[in-house]
Length: 360
Length: 126
Image 1 (cartoon, rainbow over the protein chains, first blue to last red):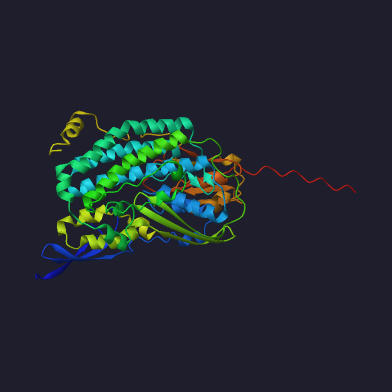
Image 2: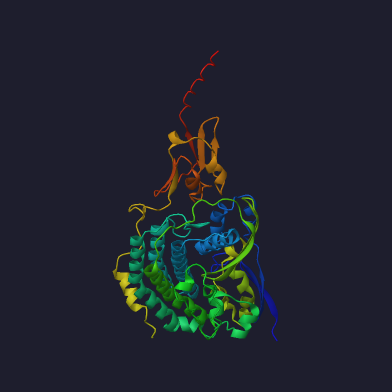
């Protein structure tokens, strides 16, 4: 048995866009154990709920995460609507669904690019981000924001997205779909990608279930966990099936995200086709939320839970968020045991860590 | 799939035009709905302070006595919550971004016109 040493990984590391610290216990070049520590960018956003009216707080809830912002705003809005018993019009649900799928596409393409960059595959990184730019432009056209959309509000959406604009977005998406398919093919078949990721950080279905992994991380281990199956917003009417891969290694998690690009595009087309007419919000809301509610949605990174509690006033008493990255830390620790030090950045990236989201 | 999967794309990148814009020589993409910066028509403002009260970032300060309205551009998150609550619809978001500045002040200050004279109360008929 070799001598064990501890190498700190993060919070400042070239591969990490956000700060997380891992103490890697190494034996020679192999990781024996990884000890994570978090808490570098806690912003206290949940506490702010006591100081902002529940209708204004959605702008803060949206800023919990810079990438899956729209899903956070929808989740918060749905939780409050659940407490208040508001019936949101179908059109608002459909537009929310379309934008959530757009967020998923842009988040996955950002991640694919970052992973390619972590592998040293610069060309693929730029290619992913070039395609992502078209998605961001369409989101800005529809909502006014590239990554922080600001469209969702309690009781519906702020401004209707006209049918012509939705058709235009769908057409743009059809134009870039061949490029996304090419990207998916490269990630699943390219020799350099496969060499770097195959058989790395393997977790079986049972291990993943026991450790409580969520999102594409779990689906890469053949665990069909997807909150979209619960049929919130318009998902129950769009015929959705989760994308799963069997191998449970880094490559499988990568392919799940690449294949989800196409699945998300299909959902957008289906939603645009079925788009109902009618109002997009419930009008003026009177009173405050009295009661408590949980709501789950599927973020690009996995399942997110929002809990809200109100006492009938305009200020909520409690808001609690449980983000997918937090759920994916235990699987990450298990994945890291046994990998080489040089492979640690790639394994850490495959859970798609969003630390800003996790610590809020 | 072999080693040279990306060759086609790499060649296209070498020969083709850059995907980026030569900003600021060429203007950035803008859409009608883009949230660039907050603007006010100070003449219509009634200094009710609703925008200030609803601002999630505490970026707006309104003074009814001095008839002033100010926004801290570094604090403003351009969420349009103030635009939604303004009863006189004198606030709006425009697609253009605020030009960056190197020195303070970062606060944009607007002084409203003096208050119109109050109509005199009719003298009580004796």
